[in-house]
Image (cartoon, rainbow over all chains, first blue to last red; front, top):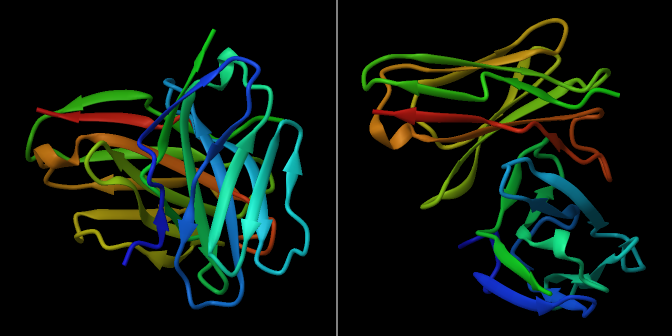
Length: 115
Length: 115
């Protein structure tokens, strides 16, 4: 089974609108971390936000927030007030406890912001 | 603060040759991991090094190898190159090697084309 599933290959959003990128995960480890990365066309992966499995509150970082629903095993990324520079690939990733730094990545969602 | 530096950025090799890619982590980071990114398979974990020891290894053939030096710099080597090895190879480093919010920071990657 896939550890990380991103079901939206491509998304479009109007500039200044909010958009939600879906991510579900699969693990039996009670300790894990969930991450979102942005990859512009240049190729570099940029860290956006982190959510720990024991965190009680949803993580927020500026215009990024993570909608963490533990029972449903989902960790959706919400980008508010979209900007043209947000157009990129977005990857959801998970690190399970005790695995060092082995990350499992989803297949990504390509986000296009329309002026 | 300098980021993760990967060299070379672009290279073209012939089938059967070998290639060595280099990665300099962020200063003070002791964990270095490598990922292969292809359109078909997405981001796949190759291996992780922590304090010069390989701690985790992904599901790749023995042609893929790596090492880490005492200054945390890392190299990965691919021998007997195949066309399917054409990919973006990403190096990532982290300070604590997989604890809590300790995220990984990526370099810009090395684009390898095998002809």
